[in-house]
Image 1: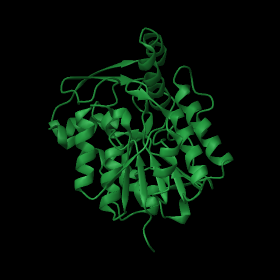
Image 2 (image 1 turned 135 degrees about the horizontal axis):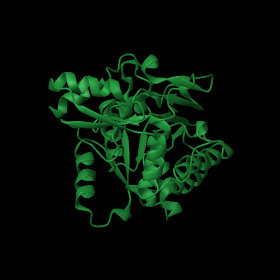
Image 3 (image 1 turned 90 degrees about the horizontal axis):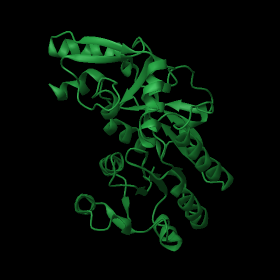
Image 4 (image 1 turned 90 degrees about the vertical axis):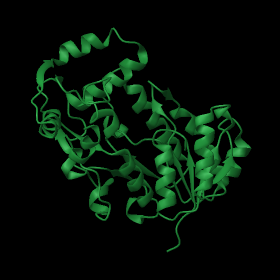
Length: 312
């Protein structure tokens, strides 16, 4: 089967650049939306040029220029969007409504993968403020996609390893402690952690797979379904040292959260649902979804143990 042509939107971002690399590696003709909004950001410009050197095609287009978006979309069979939905960086989820309109008008797209990649928003109807804005906005985009009759796949990748594993699940930390660690509650709530490069590989792998058409692809690598305590134990074994531990109750966590600015509160709300409530592992995947590591066993995913070794 001929591989689909892929347009990556948000390609210079944290996950976007990995999606471009994965698409090229898997042999897809890969187009990258070059948005004028990057201005004189030299890092992003250099990243775009690197994509071009690797065989990617730069396509001009802006969320604020409908004709340019339609023209860009017409270049590809599949559109993958990875614009930021993280408030501590930028929150652009609803800009995708412009992309949905362009895909609908173009009429050629076989599948759209919107910017999701975290907790499944359909399961977060009871999420707390202010963090629920992330899930609510993603559901607005889903509704627009389905009303437009656009074929889709949603990717629920759970916890990005860089954000969670690197800091031993401690909010605001991206390097593992060597002396002391703060447990969220008792530290026994299970969550799911996925290396960002693996997220990209699974995402690109699924774009031509009929089994995931109009479904959610959940990433649940079995060796990476762990509690905070289990992650800490892996790190302690690697550094051959037991860390001092303290804990923060959910009541104290929520009280402390109120002193943070809005963007921090959004992120901390997500930590609360993951680490205190276990929102990633408290359900079974039904007929509406598929699990990535089962569909694509040929992808050798990075275990938490392997991920933590980079910090030694």
